[in-house]
Length: 110
Ligand SMILES: [Zn+2]
Image 1 (cartoon, rainbow, N blue to C red):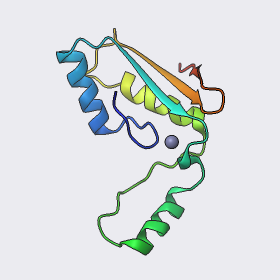
Image 2: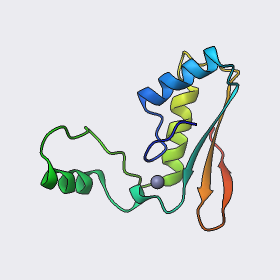
Image 3: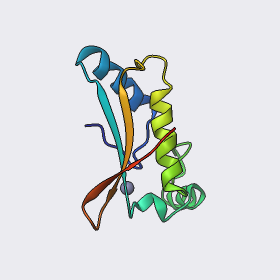
């Protein structure tokens, strides 16, 4: 399990997935985001302003706050699927975990 804020397929996440599929035999990848995510409640600009008040240096270039959850998830799935170092035979699917219901809903990604 690889976790980060926003369920992002960052370069480091993709690096770990490449290692996992090549060395550990991983054949299926599920990217799971969730409802009521804190990243839905703020924009990158607001986050940057808030953090800059605390500390002006070493600010990440972006926080990837979420405005369109389904699209955000689809973008992460596509990013993993399209990586040339991951075999096309590896299944990559996206899900949203509903915090209130405790259920997973698959998001279809073309
Ligand atoms: Zn969250």
